[in-house]
Each structure stands twice: as structure tokens, then as C-alpha cells.
Image 1 (spheres, rainbow, N blue to C red):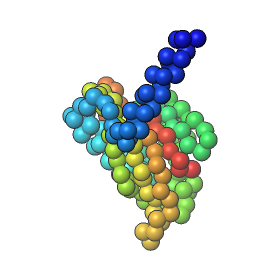
Image 2 (tube, rainbow, N blue to C red; image 1 turned 30 degrees about the vertical axis):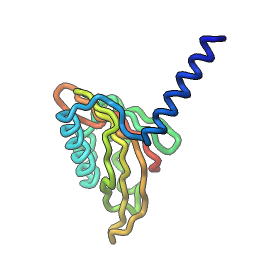
Image 3 (cartoon, rainbow, N blue to C red; image 1 turned 45 degrees about the vertical axis):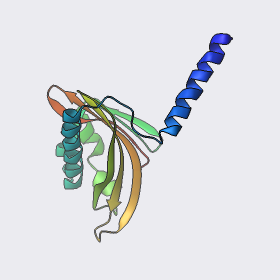
Amino acid sequence: MRMHVNRIRQLAAGVAVGWLLGGLPIHAQDRKAEAAARQAMDNFMAAFNSRDVHAWAATLNYPHVRFASNQVRIYQSAEEFARGDADYPKRLAPWDHSRWDSMQVIQSGPDKVHFAVIFVRFDVSGKEIGRFPSLYIVTLQNGHWGVQARSSFAP
């Protein structure tokens, strides 16, 4: 029982410290990895906006995991991803393009960076049609920085 009480106290202390720090990132930082991962994120968005599903698939690392719309999807390869998401421009109508509104590193190491982002979707007239807070995990695999996992509130 004493062990259980001590564990609860430790957890409560951790929550209190997190609250007191106001959500400031607490992590070991790797600036070189962060720069490479930011470039991977920008490549992801450019490929997404290009409507070229194969270019978009090339910005990912596999297996790739997406949490959205109350589902978890796991893609084992770029080919599987391209087959599964080839119709995304139609599914997102009236979507025309997206952009990052904010991108904050919350944790980083030499081969992995976690980002808290907000991305915005626009229609062809430039009107905002959606704003989605998300978590992206970018990894380095075999010399390639790519988005390995993402969790968003986007459909």
C-alpha cells in the first residue's frame, strides 16, 4: 500500500511541475536533428499540396501510423500508402491547400523529433476551412528524415 501511495505522490508531483512550467518543453535537444526534421515537415506539406500521392508517400517513413477520425491506420510501405490515399484531394473537398500555422518541437534526439503543430486547410479562394492541432513524429531511418507517425483532429 505504501508503494502505491508513493507512486501516486510521484505522479502528482510530475503533473504539478508540468503545470508550473506552463507547458514548456522539457527534453534533450538536438538542433541538427530539429532542423532536418523541420525540413522533412516542410517537404511533407509541399508534397501534400502538390496532390502527388507518390511524392507525399516519399516524405514518410514506414511503417507509417496515422491516428485520425477515431481510427488508427498503419501503412507498411509507400506503395500501400499511395494506394490507400490516392483519392485524398476528392475526400477533402472543398480543400485546395494547407499550411503550417505553428510548429513547436516538444522533444528531440539525434534520430527522432516530436512536433506539436497546427495546420490550416484553405479552399481555392483562400478562405480557411479547417484548423487542426496535431502531433507529428519525424524519424531518421537509413539516412532519410520522414514523418513516421501523426495524430490529428482532422477528418
